[in-house]
Length: 251
Figure 1 (cartoon, rainbow, N blue to C red):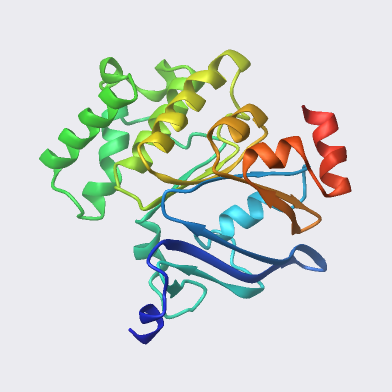
Figure 2 (figure 1 turned 60 degrees about the horizontal axis):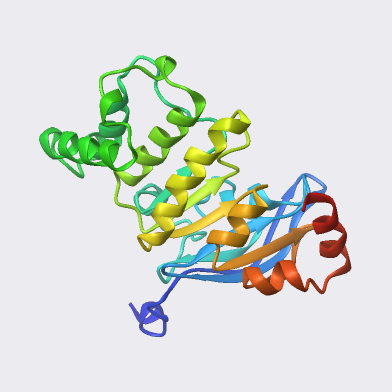
């Protein structure tokens, strides 16, 4: 346990010199950052800059070429680590909802905790009902995913991640597949999560969300972090020329 003795209890994730290449194409070129408990970190940047690859490296959905990712003091890039066990503590919400169409909403939420033997089915059912009430969809419990709108499906996908009681939630552009009028209901749920103290890392195009909800905004460009700051300073007084150019186009 000696690694953990020197570990700052407040730091949840520490990324050190993270590189990722696909063949000859280097997507991440040495990323260093820490994410503390209770932080909401918004990651922005142009398409193809490495944002999603970075996010997916945090739970080893993308295996880094080099560098390390420490989660709660343990280097999860180490092959001896049981990554599936670690992933139980890391919720992940994608652009696409990935709900099982042949299961009801409630069954979708109950599936992982029961299958992984974290809860019995009665407890998992109670948890699912509690989460559905929390996200305002208690009346949809017995419906199937194809009976729901895109915004409702994404809220169910978030509830499904929350059913595992994760220590951090990773969001990969969670609103980009939604019709514009459905974006608000998903962002509103994410704001509530942030207020409840959930640690969140969010790759997003929603600058209003980044400005209003994030405790820190990170600009990734060309595979590196080129600027990061609290939202007010980040948006009002950007220093990096590429960030200034990017914000002039998206704000």
